[in-house]
Length: 346
Image 1 (tube, rainbow, N blue to C red):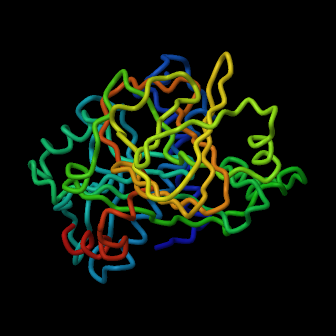
Image 2: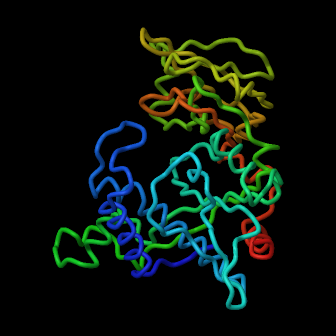
């Protein structure tokens, strides 16, 4: 489910960012820090999100012969009332314009995003809004990514835009707009988020989801050396111990890790942190209800990467999250089927 970016799409997004910057009715400060935001910051805040919205709308359009998707490109200040407005605001059908019949939220998904979902406040606000009227089946959350076909060149959108409009040698390090496309990765309904989402509330932490990392041969040999600081520990034959690398609390939300197979468990203790490793004597399957299944290979060493994410991992809002790595194991419809459903319902 892809849409190839056109130069006019990029120009439309930059025009929106510049108009927003120049409009004296909206705030010019960051909503989180209160600091002044210049044009560059405005571009970073809006450009990729708006481009993702355009790509998703075009993909939905491709499934329809008589409907055209309309997005919100008007300039207005963000308030508590409109912060959770839908991203698709109007539908043009058979020459007439109307409101959509479902609520569609479009999210930019990066390769580094461990969790997907909404804040509890946004989810509750959406449910109370006019379109879904507490009907979870009428809420659709679409996650899409901006991808470059040329992985050797930088795909930063400001650099791409400047390359299209300026003849400077240094800008050749950026890809062209024609190399970019939008790809839909996941689609959730409000019902899916309610059923599979896990509350991660204010004061909890952002945790890593890829918790097993295969070690290279050199590092693996060091663990087994006689003078190694790694000590083999006896553990339960079905439950893997959770030893945090960064001294933050063990996640209450994620729960236990059950395993099948034969393995050795090693712990390396330092003054500031601990490390734990497993050596798989057989193929090992590790299961976690929130993160899904991990398939570990016989004869391989893995570091158990139980840790938080980010410089300040403490959560400042209540959230409802699903681990992105586990989303394809939940039995949800394919993005293609969900897009067709959106086109019919909208």
